[in-house]
Image 1: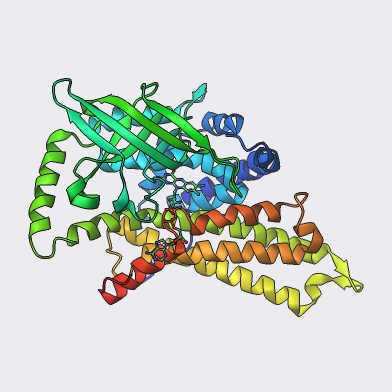
Image 2 (image 1 turned 45 degrees about the horizontal axis):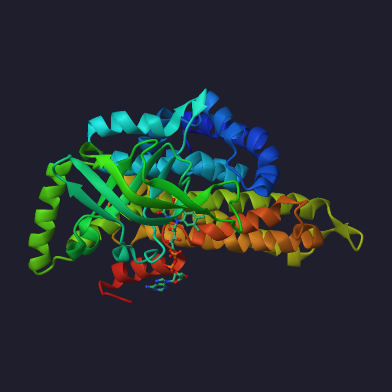
Length: 409
Ligand SMILES: Cc1cc2nc3c(=O)[nH]c(=O)nc-3n(C[C@H](O)[C@H](O)[C@H](O)COP(=O)(O)OP(=O)(O)OC[C@H]3O[C@@H](n4cnc5c(N)ncnc54)[C@H](O)[C@@H]3O)c2cc1C
C-alpha cells in the first residue's frame, strides 16, 4: 500500500511549472497575433529552443518518464498556453516519433537532430501520411515508393495533404506504398532530406482554428532519395513484407493490422492531453469572468444556471485528464489496451474540449463571441481534436471493435 498516487512528483511539478511559465508569459500574449497572421510563429519556437523547451532532449526526457505522465503534462501546459503556437512547437515531434519508432540507430542519430536544428537556426519537421483520398481510410493510400536498384535510390510519387509543417520542414517523413497488394501492411516510411528535388509544397490551407500552425499539401514528383532513407532499412522491409505475404495467406492474417493499430493507439492520449489543455484554458477564463461580470446587481456566477455549467465543465475536464493519464500510464507500463483505452481518452477529451469551449463562449455572452476575448479562438482551435489522429467516429469504431471483437463498420 502507499505506492498508488495521482500526484505529480517534485521533478514533474517543477517541469510543469516551468512549461506553464513559458505558456503564460510567452505564448499567451502572442496567441491572438499569430492566430490573425496565420503563420508559423518562428520567433516563439526560437525562444522555446533557447530555453530547451524545443529540443529533442526535452521531449525524449518526457517520453521516457517512467510514470508515463511526462508527455501528457507537457501537452496540457503548452496547449493551455495556445493551441496553434503549441502545435507549431510539438508538430516536429510527430515526425520524430515516426523515425524513433521505425528507424535504425544511425537514422535516428542522423535525422532527428536535423528536425529540430538548434537555438540559432531552428528547424521543423513534417509527418506526411494523409492523402486527398486516404484520410480515415489509410488503406486507400496511393503515394508510391519504387526502388531503383541500379542507383540504390527510392523514387517517390504522389500527393500528401494536411501535413503539419508540410513544405516548410527541414526533414519530411513520408509514408508510401511499397506493395499495393498488401494494403496497410505494404506501407513503409521514408526520410526526405532537406532540399531534395521533387518535393514541393502544394496549397497551404486557410483554417478554422490552430491558425498559427502551418498545414499544407506536399507534392512528390519523381522525388529520388538515397536507399538508406528507408526507415528501418531494406533488409528489415523485405523480411516484413515476406511475413505479411505469408500471413495474408494464412487464416487470422488480419492480426498484423491490429498490431499496427495498437501502435497508433499509444499516441492518442497525447492528443487527448492537448484537448485537456485547451478546455482548461477556456474553463479558467470563464470562471474568472463569471466571478467579475455583474448583471441584475450580482456576479453572474451567483446564478445556478451559470455556476452549474462551470461545475459540469470542470468535472468533464478532470474526467478527461484521468482517462488520458490512465492510457498514458498503461502505454508506458506496457499494459495492452484491451478496451481501446487510448482511443477512449482521445474521444472523451476531444469532445469535452469542443463542448467546454462552447460553454465558455456562452458564459462570456457577447464578449465571448468576439476576437477581443480568447475563448472564441479556443473554441475554433478545439475543433481539430475530434478530427486529426483519427476522428471521433474512428475512435468509436476502434473502441466498438475492440469491445465486441466484431468487424463493426
Ligand atoms: C489541421 C490538420 C492537421 C493535420 N496534420 C496532419 C499531419 O501532420 N500528418 C498527416 O498525415 N495528417 C494530418 N492531418 C490529417 C488528419 O489526420 C485527417 O484529416 C483525418 O484523419 C481525417 O481524414 P479526412 O480529413 O480525409 O476525413 P474523412 O476520412 O474523409 O472523414 C470525413 C468524415 O467521415 C467520417 N468517417 C469516415 N470513415 C468512417 C467510418 N468508417 N465510420 C464512421 N464515420 C466515418 C469521419 O469521421 C469524418 O467525420 C491533419 C488534419 C488537419 C485538419
